[in-house]
Length: 101
View (tube, rainbow, N blue to C red):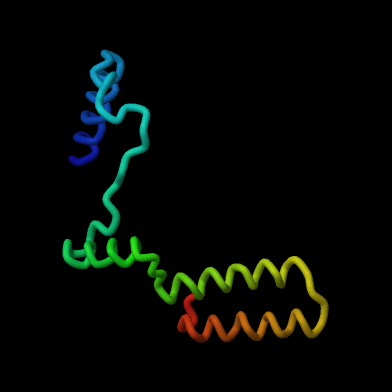
């Protein structure tokens, strides 16, 4: 039943586009701004926004960035001991993340 509604809605949208009904709308040609964190309470969303504007980076994000940098370094270079040292550091970061690579 939902498939019928999807097809009907899509057809009406296409017809309206052909008639030019969407031409000249505010924001035309600009990317849509989707609201982040749809399933987070408004209070938590406000806290997250304040922390983001203050430059706060969650520990998990920092660790993942550092891991990505280490992986690039390991792949790009280094023989023997240096490579082993970077792999140990990468393993330690993975432990800190709780194994969620």
